Amino acid sequence: MLSRIASDRSVVTVPLIDGIRSRDMSYYANSLYINGLTWFLIFTWMLVPEREIIRTKNNRTAPLRTPTHVGCAFAIDRDFFFEIGSYDEGMDIWGSENVELAWRTWMCGGSMEILPCSRVGHLFRISTYSFDGSSREITRRNNNRLIQVWMDEFKDLIYAAYPTWKQTPPGNLTDRINLRKRLNCKSFRWYLENVYPESVWLRELTAMGSIKNGLDNKCLDAYTKEISQALIPYTCHNQGGAQFFAITAHGQIMTYKETCVGVATDKKTLVLVSCREDDKSQLWDFKKEEQWIVHRESNLCIRKNHTEIVLDTCNQFVSELKWELIPPAQEE
Image 1 (tube, helix red, strand yellow):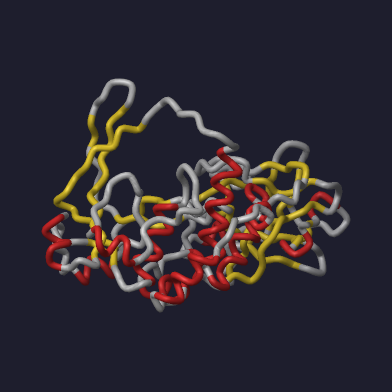
Image 2 (tube, rainbow, N blue to C red):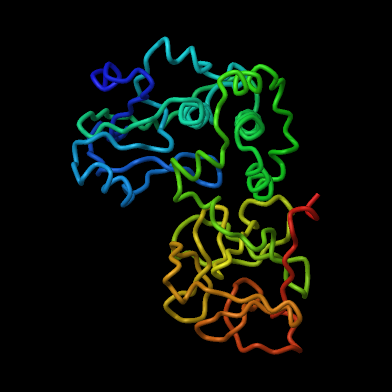
């Protein structure tokens, strides 16, 4: 890690993070990966994309460009760290600071790389620590500072999924906004197109919001983040999150966890699946006039039952088959 920085002081180096289990201190090695980002602004592990394999000529020891990092272990040239603004002192405790540093590094003249030949074991704690204030409010505030300073027009995508974040005061942003101007940093679109082209935020989205049933005040709810878990009808709360869905131009219904709405093996129950554009079972058409959501592969409609969401024969006289997409602007 230090050798790489010695050859280029603007590179932030990140090791592969292996795990140490708190219950027995056992060590497990993770496979090769880079770090991406979810709609929730939390880093995630992602497979090394084909573009990086080509760039490194399939050299498994070569540094890999990574859009974000985990934050618990990295190395950076001290002078460079302060030249680009160190950490945002308006953020508290933890949450968002690793993403902010990654974005700022890339957008303001540096780069971030994972070094496959460097490994650090991370002890995943089972206990928590105390601090003043609500952890939820603190992370929302941190997130809103990140969004307001760096995301440009893409911030509307975040606020659509998490409207309460926009309502959380971010504090004084003057210094950070001036820092971005002084460093002549690139746009967030540049970052997505050149550093993180796999980002969901670059996809063509035709609509966003909650999906409300025409019978009562029940909305489609992806309360779970687990693949293969069923979706449910739940009282509409207008808070985004599990009731936020983004409709792609390709016909997918994407959740806030960046999973997609698909069909279980019983060909009836709606479940969460990994998003794949080549999977015909997760493609849908919205029929505005009939208020149907039609499954392309089966030509059946989404129906709300008492406790479950299923596919059923389309019928204009059945209210449980009628759905309305409520855009974020109406969710105040």
